[in-house]
Length: 170
Image (cartoon, rainbow, N blue to C red; front, top):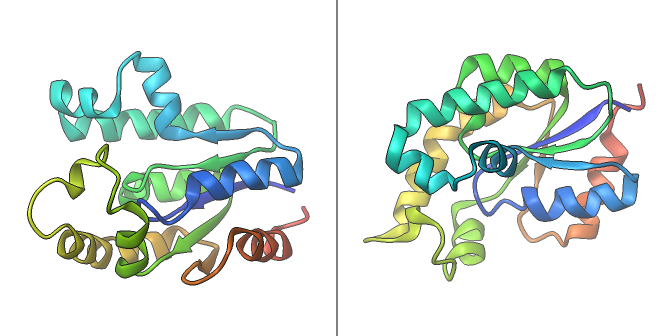
């Protein structure tokens, strides 16, 4: 099996699915956002505030390049904005099989509406912001994905079963 890579909007389940899949497949799970925070010794919010989004996006690309150097097969969960760069989409395909966990704006809002750590949700009309951003990003997610999994109304076991059934055995 190749690396299993999980992409999607915030709240689509990447982190939870990644952790549960790592137990099921007995593989290490890597979260690119957490890797960047560890290397930078600061939070993503702090990186954005001090150095801007462009710097952070460069760090995401660098993280993918480092992951390509490893021969270990892992579960890799990436930040919601990582697939927006064309270069990152190409790197994701080289890195492994990409699964897009596709959730509706309503599902995402229900999952994250009480999460005060998400800057996107602070301010007016968070559900509208989610809808607009999701519409803007969907094409990039679809272009990056080998497999799209609709996660709306599904429990995690069902999602894990779908990923496992469609994962490359190569």
